[in-house]
Length: 146
Image 1 (cartoon, helix red, strand yellow):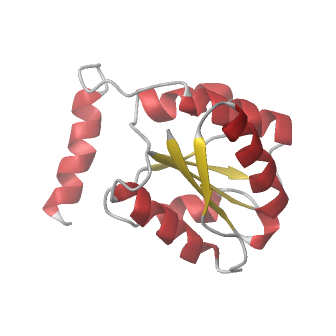
Image 2 (cartoon, rainbow, N blue to C red; image 1 turned 180 degrees about the vertical axis):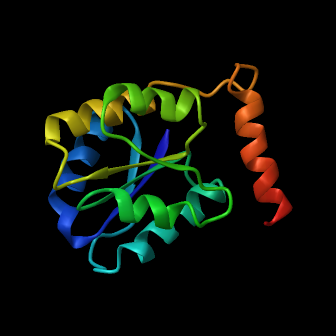
């Protein structure tokens, strides 16, 4: 998969280590930046490019993971999930078809972060699953433009 990465300056080292690990798993990683202290700017860029299909998925990092998650979810077609444990990383894909995950560099240990990234990238969403109607409702609402 081709994965877009971004973060604010608080998470630069965390992002670098996660990217290296994800590359070791055989994925193509593209760093879209980490210099802007306004985390929303990089979150919007990653989300827009993932939603446009330029990347298969994205990973965003800030201090807590919350700010980049909220920001990315403002972009139409971007579905970001803040993950803190392996089950959430799995369900981000299987139950929610999340095309972006976020993590907090100041609250997530690097080894856990690697596990979360690996789990997230190990699954594929099945629209015929029992989650299909739930995810369809989210995208339907988005199309309605409310």
